[in-house]
Length: 399
Picture 1 (spheres, rainbow, N blue to C red):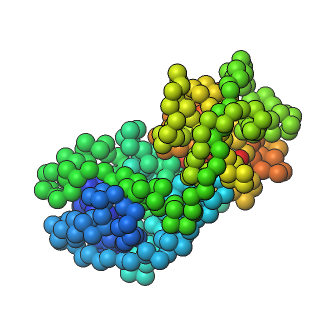
Picture 2 (spheres, one colour):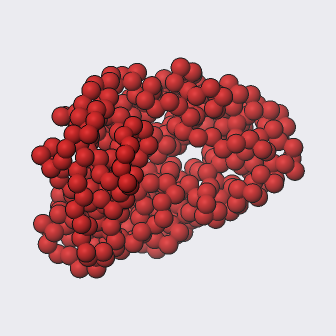
Picture 3 (tube, rainbow, N blue to C red):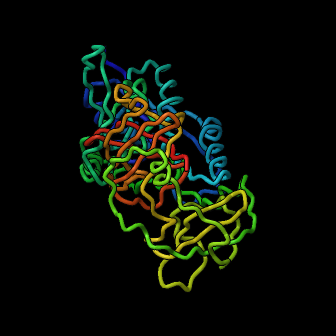
C-alpha cells in the first residue's frame, strides 16, 4: 500500500515541482492549499493575491491528476502570527513571521490536518534537506535539518524552530535542486507556475504595505528623531572566544547605550514601533554625506535614534543574548550544559552569510559572541546556528 503525502501547494513553482517529485517517488499525493489571509486592504495590488494563488494551485493539481483541497486557516493565522507581529512591534522588537508561520501553521495546524487525512508525511517546497542518522546511545533515529544545495535559495533558516517530531513527518523534495533546475522541470511539465515570480512579503500573505498593516492596531504617534554622533568602533575587530568572565560576555552582547543627551533632534517620526534597527529606507531625512540608519528605538519614550554610516557603533556589536526559554535545539542530543561553550557558525537573518561564533551556556541564558562585529542585531529576530551544512538550533534575540 502506497504511503500518503499531503503537499502544501502554495500556487508557486517550488511547491508545484515538489508535488510532482513526490508523485514520481511512488507516493499517493494530495494537494492542499492554505488560505491564511483575505484582507486586501493592506496587500499591494497584483502582489500575491490568495485567490490567484489558489487557482494556480488547483490547475497544478489537475495537471498532475492529484486530489486538491483548500484549507481556511485565516483565523489561526491571525491569532498565532498576526497578533504576535503586532505585539512584537509594539514592544520595540522586530519579529520574523515566516519562522513562526512554519512552526505554528505549516508544521503544526497544517500537519495535524494532513495526519487527519491519513497522511504519513507532509511535503513543502522549501530549499532544504532532511537526513536521518542513528543515535548510538538510544538506538533511535535523529533527524538532521540540512541546508539546501542551492546556496542562493537555502531556506533552512526559516525552519529553525522545528523539532524532531515535526521533522520526522516532513519531506523536502526540491532540497537537492537549484532554482533554475526547478523551473526547468516545471517548464517541461508545462505547469502554469513555471515562470511565475517568487512571492515576496509575509508568509502566505504576500507583499503587504507594512505601515498600513501595522496601523490596523498600532496607531501613529509623533516622536523625536535623534542623531547620535559616531564613536570609533573598537579597534579589536576579532574575538578569540577565550572569555570566562560573565561581565565581559554581558558587555559584548549588549547594544550600545543610546540616550537623547548624546545627540541632537533632526526630525519627527510617526511611531517608534514602525522602525527596526538597521533600517535605512523610509526615514525621510536627507542632507548627509553617508546613509542614515536606525541604530536604536525606544517605544516607551517613542524615540528613534539614527546614526550616519555603516560603521556606526550603534549598528555593530560582537554578540547577543538569549533567555533560556527562548532557546530551541533542533538537535536535542547536542544541547549545551550550563558552563559549556561550543563554536558554531550562525546567522541572524535569511540569506546573511554564516559567521563564526561561540555559544556560551550560562545559568541565566546563552550568550553568542561572534568572531567579528555583526551589523543590525535586533531584539525579536531569530539567530540560527549551524555545524557545517546542518542547522543545530536557534533562539529569539532578547536584546
